[in-house]
Image (cartoon, rainbow, N blue to C red; front, side):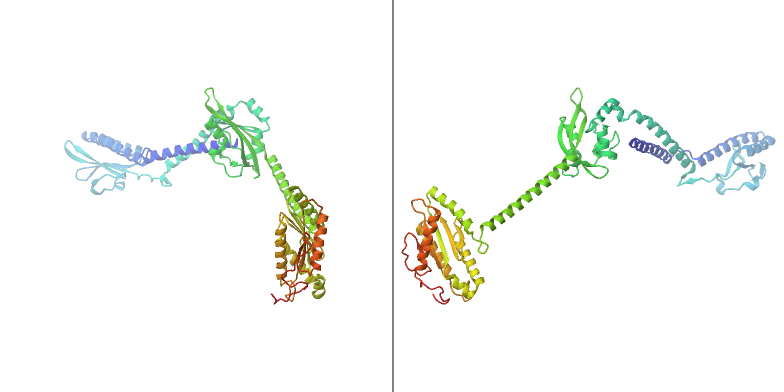
Length: 517
């Protein structure tokens, strides 16, 4: 009802303003009567009639009738002060009392609004003149530059016109109330629905809004019936303002096809975002022409909130799983790695070496197991201390890993001894690789504080044509290592040969001076 009240007020004010404007326009075109001009016209008419009457009486030389006429007109004529008749020579022939005091000759003998003179004639000869003195014209009262009477009339019309228009509109709008277009029983039926319902005409004006829509979804934001639902601040599913051409009821009305499952939003009177699922169906007549739209609104705010909470929980769970996986990897790395060198520890090395051996046997691929031992490592610890010894082990492990990339394995067997498992390399390739590695170790001068070199002894055992166990390969590699160490160290021995040739470098020495070749 507030919407109707404001509409009646606005329309009434508009009609009253239009009426006042028409009156002012009429006044500007001279259609409004001028009181001063009317009085002048009245004086001119009186003067003319008096002149005729006095001329007739003068032609009869009826002095008494002339005087009676003058006195009667002065006593009864509106605004007349005095009347006099002068002869041709200027003598006053007849006059009312005080005429001499009231009369003033005007320049050029012309009449003015207060002093009018009319000629008398005797046949064709001038016989004198009639003099009439009037009271001064009343001053013209003005308000805001307009005649006071006009302003008063405009005020009267504006006030009482507004009241009249307002009362008329009450009756007219009662008859044209959009809510009467839909029977009360239909409105009551829609009010029982849990989802919001709007019914619009073909010009998208609201004809009905059920209780679920007006109370639950919008509250005080609901526009008055007869106004446009497009004026509401509709939002898209991304909370961006929705253009009028994107509204589902407009699309349904233009296409004459249902528009279903459109996600929209709107903020209620508390500023909270209401998320809606909207369906719009055109209302067509017997000719198939859309005459309106019925729109349903399903409030999915709670469902959307629950989904967001569920998504947040899933993201948190995923992050927790990633964190647990990282921690498991760290634990697995700690459990399988040697804490000093970062190589596989003994248990992890042999677990992975068993798998490599099984795959090599199944695929008939070559596999070699190598034992690498730092020569005279105890002397290094005794001479330089355990920190330097650890530095040598770390450097040696790094160098071994650089030579033996995955899927090859490098593990710390114990103390200064390392195990290597290579897959897919022939005996000759393994021997060449180990020889290069041995030389690379002996070329390093930065592990010991004196710049001296360290050396390694290497034993090789390879998988033959007949399958064997990992323990057999370990035993053979260890035997080959023993032969390398007993043969002077700083050399590579393959178990298959068991008669290693001396290397080109000087054998049997732990340290080689830094300046030697």
